[in-house]
Length: 186
Image (cartoon, rainbow, N blue to C red; front, side, top):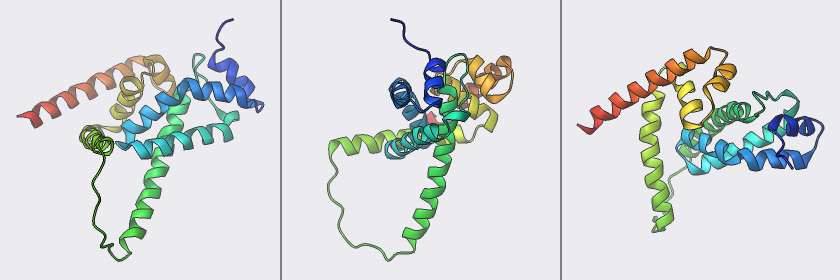
């Protein structure tokens, strides 16, 4: 028995087939989560954004774009929007918290796993800081093609540009990042 394509599954999803949606989720949740982490540098925010992505995908299942038999590029675009929504929400929450009086409780010792996550988050923030300084067009192409393994052709279709333009943007972004991190190591 052959494995159904995303296009075949999504046809079922559009008519409310939850089991087909579950297959799509199982197939792409890790890629969406990794994309969200790369955008946020936070494991917990990435988890929330991944959940939001699939909730939005279910609600907007009739608007999904399947490119070359895959719904992943569309899910990654939904994820990027979910991350933006999470950031706006976090800014509002932080503003509200900063209006509260400070808490005087002592901090507790962190577990090794939490310390590892903090280190991962710190390293990812440095990378994300450098990536955010790239021109938006280069940043989008890099995140889709390099970080999320979307093909150049699919990224071109999603971004509405030629495949050559996507390749050029990715190449320029890699060059800029290499120079940035070479300077910071000196």
